[in-house]
Length: 417
Image (cartoon, rainbow, N blue to C red):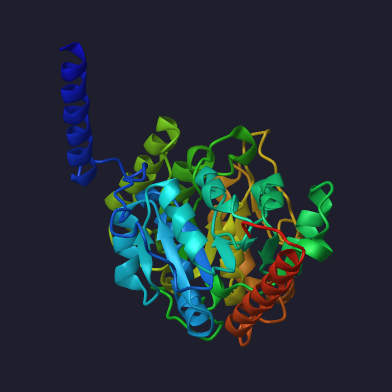
């Protein structure tokens, strides 16, 4: 009798969890794992490239900028995107021509890959659940990231988990070589350019708002002190209110979508910045990440204030003035490849003088030349004309290498490959 009651209780709990996963109240920070596993029990992938993205809704900003690149790759080498969150899969499927599936169970993925001839897996972030796909030795694995920056995590030891790192430019390769022990960049790094910045505003493009807006685009607070680069808590309200009071520039505020997820204090600071801009009214405004692309926001601004983050690298092709904040936390570790020493830095104490600093940068003719040099170093010689072709070309080279290596294993009598 007791066993029967426990069985009914487990069924009720399972049904309740299933209803919760289907509801709009299920957290954005957890993959809903509502997979197509039953329908795909005997399926196979007719794809050469697997993009593995086990993130939840709050991490979609990491993969959506890659969709045009995946579409271009799909024309040459068939691609499939594998998610663990059905909400993410639905969003990606509506925005891309590349097939998207949701696989919740590790065993389902194991079976599908055993029946398929997938040759290359791509990863846009270091999500812990990447290891569910990294386990498979029948394909090669490449980390492509979701933007290049001088954050310490850009030279993380986690890069050793992959066969290759597709680097945007020489800056990324040099950064890794200087910071990682026992990692041969000549073997593992391939410079592919940075397709994510392909639509960034060129110098002659994009009308700026008013007399030239200043965009403040801070990053999130990070999950550990060593990666706490956000200026929202240390600079945010003081910086924005000083710009508003100065009156020379319209102020645009585009916060990172994860600000405040690990720290209530950062959430409060973000709200204070929003309230200051709302009180000032037009032409000042807040622009949410899901509202428009980063490049579209860039085109609205004449100058940028940001933290140490990929936003700085993405802005470089505009050649417009940039100021990077100095992290207030002493534990924050940067991995500067050259940009942080070449652009002005803004301390928390200097926030009141931000407008004067921006004004001086706009008048500095030599600053444009320094930024042009950074573009070549950070974004490779392939940017912008050949960057998409280069990405597809490198993927093709890795696919050919995988086929050759796997053929050797088979000749040597290896099984399960």
